[in-house]
Length: 162
Image (cartoon, rainbow, N blue to C red; front, side, top):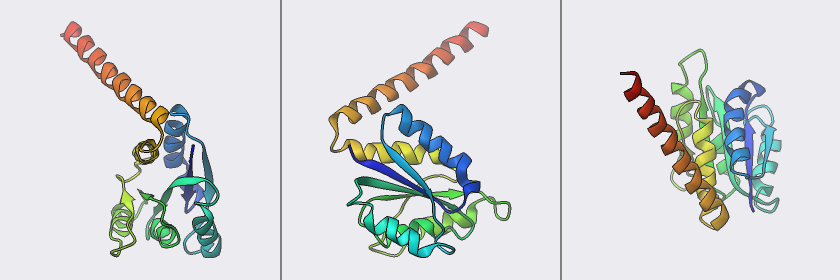
């Protein structure tokens, strides 16, 4: 199975990344997590991105706040799918990061999830990998069924209380 590469611009993004890691662990998807900055460690970010495919990665998740150039810098150096997580900062509540992540030039796409959307980034990565992995596809389907059942159980509980 291909791995998911996760890069974050700062270790302050770790709480968002932990949400992604939990989903990947639950779905039994191998992953690696690194801290690379588009601005402070551009050569390391580039080396990771350029070598990701040959290192066994199938998708890269990149999380960053404020200027949030990391996902775009990663995407510029690989043809693997890149999923950007814009992270909330105290300045503009993550809107700056959202716009920086989603507004990529033609030919260098970055799929973008919600601000602080670590879990959905991992689910999207899993869906991409599941296109060529039937066992992972079945785990995703099972997860969806379990999530639906959890909602229905809550619904029944509400009806009993009212």
